[in-house]
Length: 278
Image 1 (cartoon, rainbow, N blue to C red):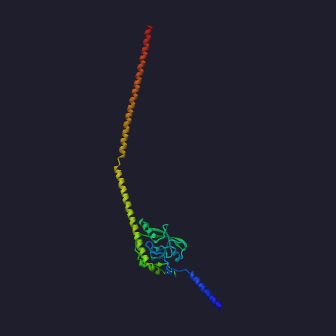
Image 2 (image 1 turned 90 degrees about the vertical axis):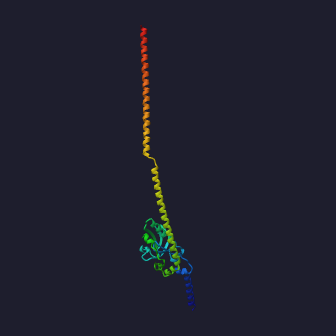
Image 3 (image 1 turned 60 degrees about the vertical axis):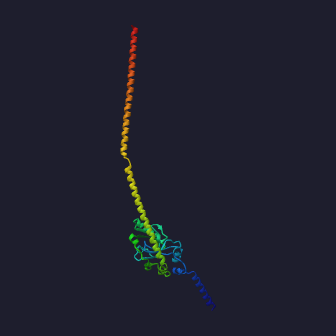
């Protein structure tokens, strides 16, 4: 009897230890007061995304240093589903840039669409590896309205310890609020982009008008150049004439003076000699 009693006591003690170290499922953790980040509905991917923090890492058994956006659910036939993005995937980057909030992803796509970009590259952490995913997102697809009330029926993350329907029910108000807030933020970005484009166009027109006015006001460069050349020619001609006159005058004077003096001297010498002999 004592042996049986001791065995029972050991079993009870062991069960207490196991209970203390048991992994608490997400729904149980929420019931115990743990709070996960509110999920958001992505217009760009037609998916329910949750920013990853320590509570998400612990609740969903992710890698300790994992960061990005956890895909909780995808709309059947939506953009994410068509590109092979699945519930349980983690979106880490878009176009080579890290994303830590759902709105960052949608804003990146909204800005790209304003530039005419429709092809986007995503980095997806899946099964311990990074999987590249290419997606085509058009402006028409992006602007389609999503009925937030229907996301409870989307293809979702499944686990025996996690109830997606209960999760959505608990966070329904936050999901609705975040969706409306995100739409407003995207509209503001679009409006800012349009204003910037208008200002750039106006600046270009003003610059073109100023350039045209300067061209009209500028004096004729060819006319000035010709006038200047004419003046130089006149000055050259004048200098040449003066030089010619000066040189001619000096030569003539010198020649005449030399000849006259020489003739007088010779004549005087000869006459003088002749008178002495006589």
